[in-house]
Amino acid sequence: MPTLLHIDSSPLDSSISRELTATFVEAWKAANPSGTVVRRNLSEKPAPPIDQAWIYAAYTPEEQQTSEQKQLLALSEELIDEIKAADEIVIGVAMHNFGVPAVLKLWIDQIARRGKTFVYDANGAKGLLTVKKATVLISTGGNYSQAPMAAMNFVEPYLVSVLGFLGITDVRALTASGASQVMMGTVTREAFIEPLTAQVKTLVA
Image 1: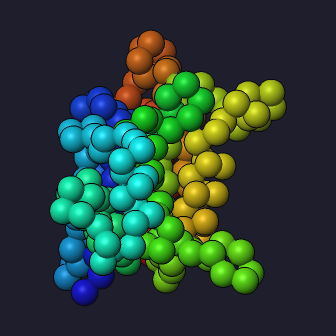
Image 2 (image 1 turned 180 degrees about the vertical axis):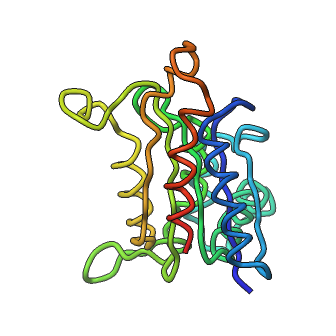
């Protein structure tokens, strides 16, 4: 029975990226009627930023960790178990100041742990989150598909890189460019979303 991990990171209830992930999930459920969807809205309960105590705990061998250190890592362990249990991941991302939302970066910091989701061996870094695929659905206010604005898009390159580092190399991305048109009223939400909906459905395996 396949499991889909559904991650949303936009703080807006009216988020374009949330609507796109909802479309993806609906299509995925239709294609996988016996599958399980696990949703995590990162804006509802953001992970805390990692600090010195967290780092020391993460690099302490498990058998030597104190109860306080285990508590510090409890959320990280939960999130790592969640992603390891998933066969597929869909992530909704709104561009914030040319990068990913802070809550998504905090989530990544919690799951990117040496010995848990990646290791270093004689050949260098090796991701441990293998045999998975990810779909990243991005919304941007402006259009960053062409120069010179393309150089300011740090969302897709970053996510493809970090997911690949962790072992998830089958990553597909779709960007809803120019979402500010909807906010300004120059394009209706329905007209903006309709062609994207069709594209999202084609991304479902």
